[in-house]
Length: 396
Image (cartoon, rainbow, N blue to C red; front, side, top):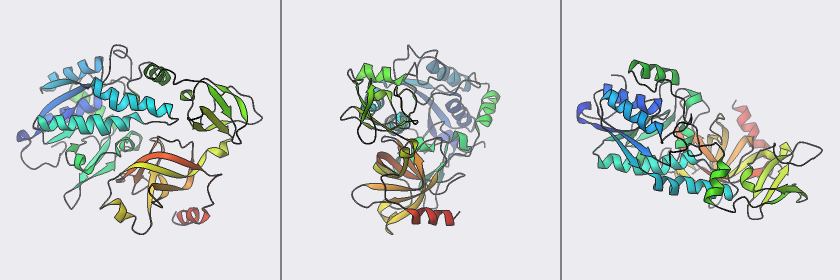
């Protein structure tokens, strides 16, 4: 057997719905499970108007990808369905993406897509089709614990790990989700695609923001929300006006280029004041963040998060960007909101980004949950926490 879904009963008596985006990962997932003897049904979601993105490299869930998914399904001999989710995707992902940018945040639309479209709506469709599980081509692992529940773990190949985008998955959803590629490398996946004779074996990987055909997200925002690019002031940390801008949606925290102002030292976007349409800039040192306040926290660790915080704080390892390695931190709840305090700090932390918790800094660490960053406290504004940093350094 190539892979086990950890399901009781014979594979031929077990229906599995595979979310097929038309890419190599989901295609190999379907082929693997079909080869194991499962009753596989492929489902592709049409998420947005695919006319402009039909032939663009890196697009997904539209145009050519639907045809590719259908061709793979025919090749491996499974039924395949295309479901129109355009209106739902616009409401749950695209509109929220635009609203978040206008509010001065840096959103992560892939988290919203996984949380609402794939692991809520599509999971419900899979159950209606009589499936025992929904399988996807994400590079993340799910394993059964001793108590019978399932936990989420980072993928074997660190560069491909997608756990950052799946932290909002609930325990109930994990019970019905499977990720057959979590213990494979991308090279192994492509080789399997060739062995199965799949036409998508060498297809380009999809982009993070799949619904932006041109790659210019500001065009999408301005089309959905006219007036979103209203001009305003560029100010320094003390509020002195340094220049003008053409809309805060054109800026992100940590940005240096494109400010259009002259200064005696390099300046970076430190924060966005959406209410006053102000872009606040400062030196690089002002980007460093030690503490973050979180919203919409989802807990995937043992027991409840309140039990985990019974001692007042919990040592975790966190990622605030998908491409950064986890770093040491403390999770606390000093009031109504959860806070994360970083041992070494991080640059360019912005509201709207995800902060994901792990139980270890490397390897196939367990995902303990995470939340969205509500606000970040710059190092210059935070009280010194030398004791915390020294404690982490002593542990190596």
